[in-house]
Image (cartoon, rainbow, N blue to C red; front, side):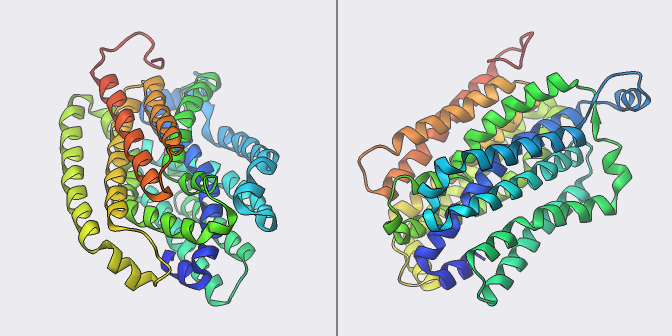
Length: 393
């Protein structure tokens, strides 16, 4: 899909599309905090607590109601703030795409909560189905729009439609299994507070991952969308082999770390060690063959040097490691430290984007240094002894 959009729309057109995509998935990335907290809440609500909540013997919270309320809030916030970011990042002609960002984000609130319920309840087939359907539908719809010569508005619709379609299909396949676990023992206040902390951390995560192209757009001009398109393409493709599987597994890791706290250290060593080895191979390949392969596939408009490509791969590995340690910290209920690690990484990354270097090496430096510091914060948090209020740093 990335190749088709870049080839059909050109580097400049891809730059605009990638900023829209980034804006939408920046919000989606923030809402991933809802999935993380729903996973933890469901996983730590035992069978007896579920029966007590359903029978009315114990107060609980419906994640369905919670996600519906949150969806309305998110739509309103995105539309209300759009004059501050849409014209500057998308350009005056395409600022209306903010409406599609808002609607897509609202649908994703429901998807995030449902995915968290599935992960926390161990409904892995349903969770895999919603992830797969969402991705496949989006590719099919976007390619169909490109084949028919559709406008950027048609592309935006194709991008957001898979959220409700995938959710409806999976809910229809196993409604009782999913809905029966949608009530958790946490009260509304506690759930909202914990979700707020995970969303704060997810906001920082989204800046580093989903929303980074949008952030980069503020450090260039609308006339330089072609150069931005090449950089965004490189960031997207160098991350995919590392971050896509780790993101898909994050809820599984939260569940596993919650149920097997005694294995956290060993699991972290195995995953991060394997990640480092894999990233080293990818960095070498990017350094030796990256540029000619990219130009062969995407054409001469692609303009980025081998060193930047290799550095972007390394930065993706650091973000991946930060994601893994974050799952371990969150599983221990240390929401505050979880947020501190990601927020620290995000702030350092944003600060380094002001360094007076060309955009590509500046982006690579920022994306490597920020996550490295955040990783240190998470590892330090995991070494701390449990305290009475683990939700706070």
